[in-house]
Image 1 (cartoon, rainbow, N blue to C red):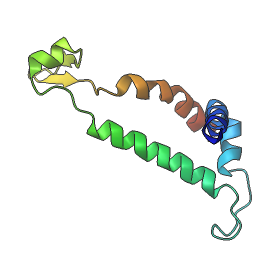
Image 2 (image 1 turned 180 degrees about the vertical axis):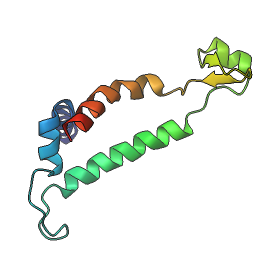
Image 3 (image 1 turned 45 degrees about the horizontal axis):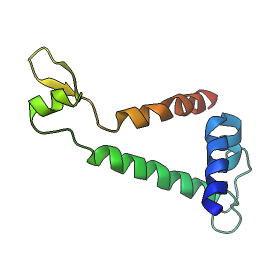
Length: 108
């Protein structure tokens, strides 16, 4: 129940920049973060998610063999010196988040 509710709330605030700003408390007056910050837990949840995604991206690896990497679609091109350019295995999932991230950045 909590996970479904949290997921619905998280989905809503990540789809709308105004809701996100309110969710993290960026529209509130500055208060003592230890005593009076009602949005601190929301910010910590988002930080946890961001660092989890970053950890997955950093740990994701493509095959070490160039032939296996090409067969798996991990080679997207070659540099002028002939070295392959690899695609991160998590890029498809992460690219889905960029539209919302860029919309949020534009509102700031």
